[in-house]
Image (cartoon, rainbow, N blue to C red; front, side, top):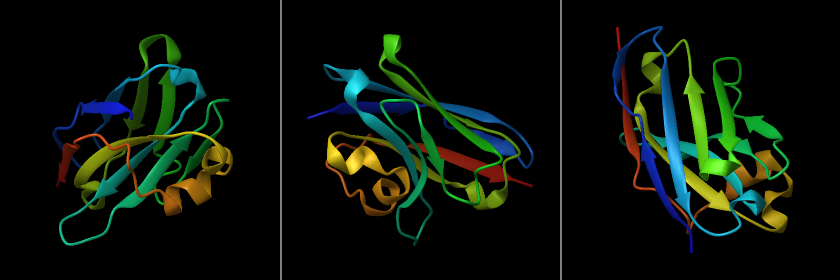
Length: 128
């Protein structure tokens, strides 16, 4: 099991920036793939960004130019830098972790991941 805790969510104006952090309490953090998902009210959970153990990244198409996922293995932390925020980015953002063969393809992992390793979520609200 992996314990994950997100932070950094806030309310911002359109065009603003925010940096989310997620700390993992787990051994061998370097071996995990990590991702960010989001869920707006009344909608399903959507994969946003993925980063593999090798540092390779995959993004959902609507956020690719604006969001950047990164990891700091010395701190057991994954980040999501969000720039040029839009109202449609408003959602609860969750981090997640996986390992093994499912991590091989970031896009597939983002589309198919259903847990069990989720954080509690952090609220991001973008207003105009």
